[in-house]
Length: 430
Image (cartoon, rainbow, N blue to C red; front, top):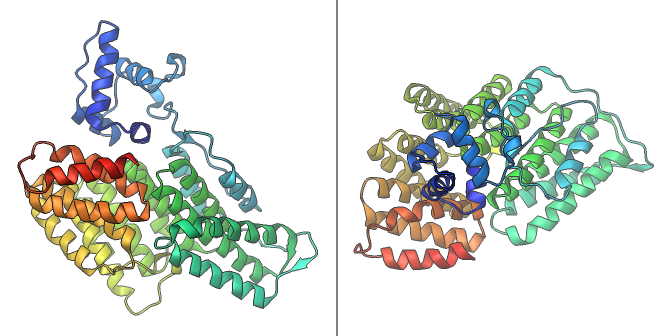
């Protein structure tokens, strides 16, 4: 539901208004408000059948497709993933690379939870060389691995140049998996590269608000990591799917996925990130005790990882990330003062190279200041975030700012607000 709303550029208030208008057209009255929409999106409440039919009308879904007992899965925003199995990687990558004609936001919560559960139980099959006459020698394999690492490093700062390179690199890797001859260990390393590249492409699509494409690439990455027997990498990919579920206001699904991921992750850095992401889901579920427990676990695991090389997929995790995400949890729980302290501390610590992350963190900071009435500070953080997000083409961060801008509308006399609104109109319309 969140995806469908954001896809149309509607705020919570605008969707509530459209539902009320739909009810009025039928001679009915609806008490739908912005807050109630938010409760539906967070899974705190379920709309009754009459309200679901109004949502169907607003989102242009035929009434015959509405099943009140399967809410929200009848909304046109979900799909089902392939099951894990022998040689399933190529099929999953092929599905991810197909043209994204559908409006699916992500896989259904039940399907994702089932896939995560399957991942915890199913052991990978032996990897065998494929059918063709080509071979993969050690020099080529080393070059492929270094290229994967370099492209992942450039993904944020050089986004406009790396998208096609990543797509081409993934095509090369899958061609080798399908056609080359290689021993077991080479096959395992090739699968790890496919997983890492597909994971990076998934983040590209996610940052562009293309959630259906993002989830399919992460799904393909999970298949490949599972085939390689890399449990930490697989746990990280599951955590990406859980992060997306949180972003799409499905924190209950995220909690279930992360429970499976945590059960098999081994490295303390991996476990730290998984606990941190679950803390955010618990915050959205308004469960402060579980949230604080996971924050403490994330901090302890990150400390334990300080003297061990982390897996490449989470090597970026730092005290800055822990601080800001902790602050975001406090913000969701209504503890603005604690949130300000943690978010500001994390923003200060973050290196300049992580510009996209900084744009997101600054948007969180602006949200926190706006909630506590510190409008001038909120303006400063929002303008910095807008500048960074616009320069990077980070649609996901721009979406955060789009949601935030109505909060400034009642503060026209505060210095900087009119200028911010003007800049935002230009940036968010492009």
